[in-house]
Image (cartoon, rainbow, N blue to C red; front, side, top):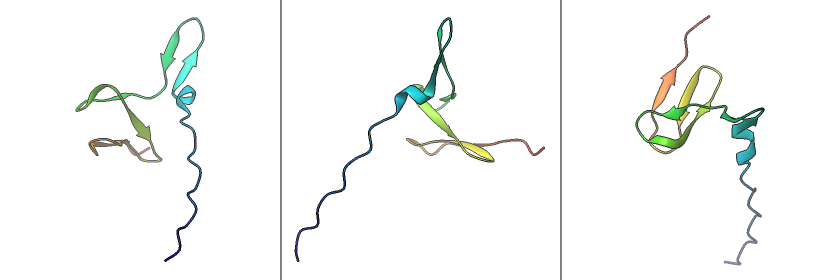
Length: 61
């Protein structure tokens, strides 16, 4: 088989996880299992950790 060309990787966009006003604040919450440094991803009805898979369902409105 012929080798396929590699796709270029997207750069990490870490600046989207923080907000700078007077102080630097974090937008997302940390994972309670993994600890500080591991953000939980926000989805439509849940937040989930990409490292350990911990998921919290949000309240229905």
